[in-house]
Length: 164
Image (cartoon, rainbow, N blue to C red):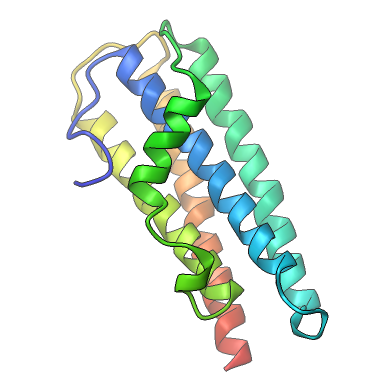
């Protein structure tokens, strides 16, 4: 498991990982939007615009859910800039120019988020720690978000297939 610790042993560690999820959602959303806006007018497309708009709304909802869990934890939060640097270091190694088109960039972002949540769920499940938030609530939220990311991957892949 490369993106998340093997297990989560404290509220502080869980809060940091959830904060990484918040920033990851933000980075993926902002990047896709910037990439789309950089396209020449003739390359813009209603279906891609709808997909990115839906992804943006979903990302905002995921951030709210994660922030709610963080607020309920008995943990010190770390500064946003520090979390952002961690996300950039781990997930920001590629840029929009590394992908052939906005859909490939969006697919990469959705897959990255899915993998992060999948690893985080595994780490929480592997932990014997007691958290100040009920473990079932944390896992249910993370599983719902992971499922939404999987659906996002499928939606992007279908749109790509329809365009091929």
